[in-house]
Amino acid sequence: MSAATPASAEAAVVVGGGISGLLAALELAKAGRDVTVLEAGDSWGGCVGSHMVGGLTLDSGAESFATRSSAVADLAAELGLAGNIVAPHPGGAWVQLPEGARELPKTGVLGIPANPWDPEVRRTLGLAGSLRASLDRLLPASAGTRAAVTSVSDLVRARMGRRVLERLVAPVVGGVHSADPALLDVDMVAPGLRAGIRTHGSLAAAVAAQRRGSASRQDDVTGQDNAAATSQPAAAPAAPPAKAGSAVAGLRGGMHTLITALVAELRRCGVRLLSSTRADVVARTANGWRVSAGERTYDASLLVVALDGPSAVGLVQEAVPDLAAHRPGAGPDVKLVTLVVDLPELDRRPRGTGILVAPQTPGIQAKALTHATAKWDWLAAAAGPGTHVVRLSYGRGGDTRAGKPRAGGADSGLPGGTGADAGDQGLLDAALRDASALLTVPVTSNDVLDWDVVSWGGALPFAAVGHRQRVADVRRVCAAEGNLVMVGGWLAGNGLAAVVADTKRQLADLIR
Image (cartoon, rainbow, N blue to C red):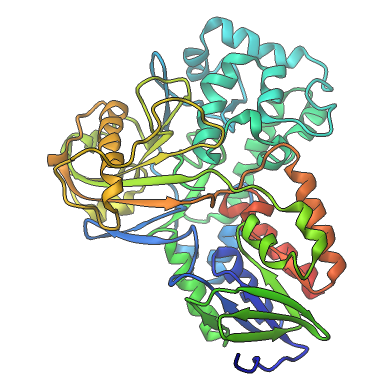
């Protein structure tokens, strides 16, 4: 093995070149540290990546960010991209229910409505459902807030009833978090919501307060026409009020431009960015840490591990045995099917910016569809009249339904997509069927100009009930080491806003 890189009191190694690892490296470099980043893959950004489909450079992962905080907007401004922050088209999103499609509520958090009697909520829930949901304001504030840990499902069912859970919350949570709401810790995926019930007296009032807070913060960070995991449809960030979930924004050119700017800034700061360099072993030394990557070793006084949860704990647990008991399971496998189609019939945006699928809906395998050229005006201009980009998402944690996406075994009559392999042909067939049903416009193989499948194997964090305690335990063990920090979505929560804000906090504590 070759000699280790020179160690010094100012040396830091970051393992992982996703958004959290790159941001950690930037914070360390600004603090005067000599930083090396090790990335196993051949590209940077992790789930904030890009791919070329039909001559268009598109986001292969995250394509928006939540404006519930200014974290991402602040980072974009720091990297000179403030002028590129854009709001999605104000078309709103829909939800596919067993009996048909409905518009999602104009105001909500995780699909939980701020007013059960809003027209769109009333049409989706029916009279009985809205009546049951309105009982929320008569319940004591302690209902749903007493337990130390509560799932999204338990909270919504207790306060607003089954129809709100099944018709609004389950589709949104499935689309955003790729999980069953019964499995998710509400305090992880909607921080402050239960506290808001105690403050404002009801779940609806707590949702309304969070929406008002999001809107006012949004006004602070988006000075122009502006307003954050994956493939969920978004909605208008200002007036008219935003639709499902948090208000969101994007970047003109795609979220992957944030990574391009971040990598450029790291190079300007002298950070060593080593791709195709997989960290194999981490060991304690007298002065800090030694990271082995193949035949090379890297010594540092500070170590940042920015990998998915199982990989992060697996890499470090031999050096820090107390971490072994806190290794999480992998998240759900998600596949994103991107279609570039020549289909002028989609110019009318038949389902707004996209549509979420209720888990109980028969005949639809996708959990969400984003009509990207309807959502982002800059992309529609780049694609040109009649050309549309549609992205469908498959896979959700805890999903035991029959009819999951099939791989292979079918002949679509199309050549392999940009990055797809032969096993994805069956998934393409499912995407064409689902897109036709969800958009109410036939989408056939003859309409497809190009397509691609991107797989995220267990990459989305899974904030299961009890996960918040695991996060606290991991952070406690790392803090005891004094010069070790772990960052990433599995600790921060799903979405760029959560990851960026948490990474900055953790690095500030580590540097201090």
